[in-house]
Structure formats: C-alpha cells, structure tokens
Length: 115
Image (cartoon, rainbow, N blue to C red; front, top):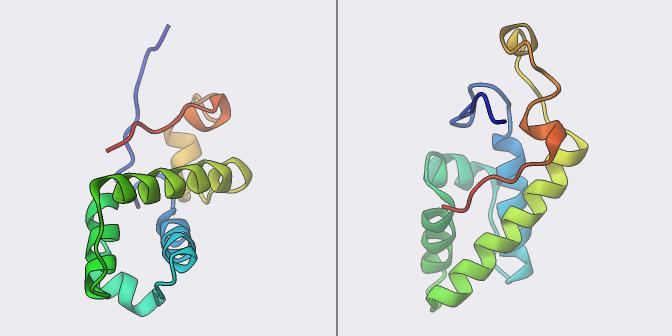
C-alpha cells in the first residue's frame, strides 16, 4: 500500500542536476550536438526535458520531429535510471527528515513518470 509520495523538484532532496547535465550532454553528443556545462547552466537550467532537448537541437538548426524528440527524452530517461541506481547524492539532513530512507522510491526501483 502506497502511504506517501515525495516530490523532489531537483535540488531539494537529491543533488541530481549534475547527473541531468551529463546525460543531456551524452544524448545530444550521440546526435553530434555539443553541450558545455556553462551553456547548460546558463540556458537550460529549470527547463523540462522536452524544452531542453528541443532548445538545444533548435540552436543547431536541425529539424526535430515529435517522434525523434520522444526518442531522445526516453533515451535520457533510461540513462537516468541507470545512473541513479548506482549513485545519487542526498543532501545533508534528508535521511533524518525522511525516516523511511532507504525504503523509499530509489530502493524500490520505481520509475519517474514521463513528462
């Protein structure tokens, strides 16, 4: 029985923004599109996955179908699941705040719903 849901709007519970950056860099790099850390934090921080991908691809004057956009987002989501399975940095004090840790969503392998 599900008793609670915890939402982490990136940067509240876990420090996963560096993971998001590296994975966007990886996915876009696989498509031949470079993304620097400086550009990511200056232009795309706070955007959802579709807006990040679309924005970066558009800056390179490349066409992007809805199907291709979805494929890139799903690929990044798969990479994200793999990345957090191995390592995620929890901010200090969170484990005391959330007494069910580590029985929470990460240890159960629940997936984040698609945007």
